[in-house]
Image (cartoon, rainbow, N blue to C red; front, top):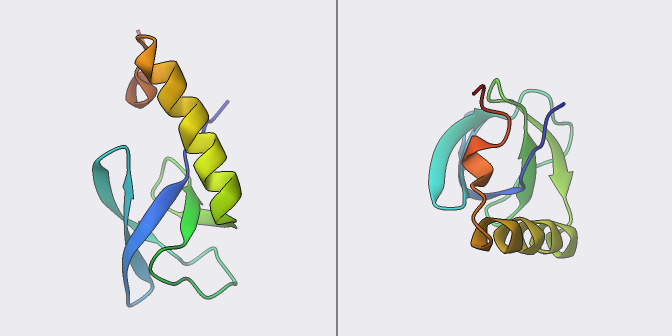
Length: 84
């Protein structure tokens, strides 16, 4: 199972986007998307670094708030899915 946290787009150039989620920045490929991506959009990103879906801002904020609530109770979303 894969859990994708919505990542906010900071920059877009040459089929790539710089995104941020929970303070972590990374460059991702936009190759799988058919929609135009703009700065400020939220994306779901596969583990391999490919954005696969654009998410409405309200839905993204709701998901991020839920994840933040879980992390505030001692969980770390960056470790979800990590092999123990």
